[in-house]
Image (tube, rainbow, N blue to C red):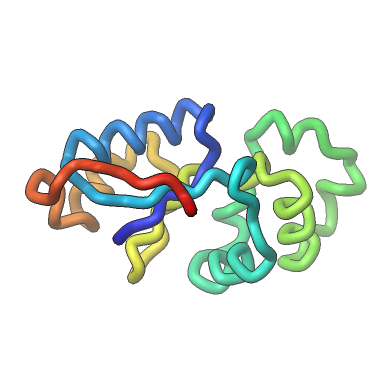
Length: 129
């Protein structure tokens, strides 16, 4: 089963969830704020995709950081920032098991391509345990 990571009140996450539901893709939803985020999970994401892709530099949370926090970023510093402020993580993150799909806007075609079961699976999602 796929896992969709994000924040339940995020509009982009809502769009992705709606698309998954409408296309019959079973998934588990993990809310970064309600369910938490462990360093191991974020390090796994960063090992699978470039950490620069995970960091949302266009977010309100990014703009609220000090210049010192924003400069001289390394993997370790970015991970620490994202763990401290999960709203810095670009979302949603869909973990298909084989791939991570970061973001959703303009990615419906990517979802369709990477989720061949779209339209054939039983509709539904599951909250994180």
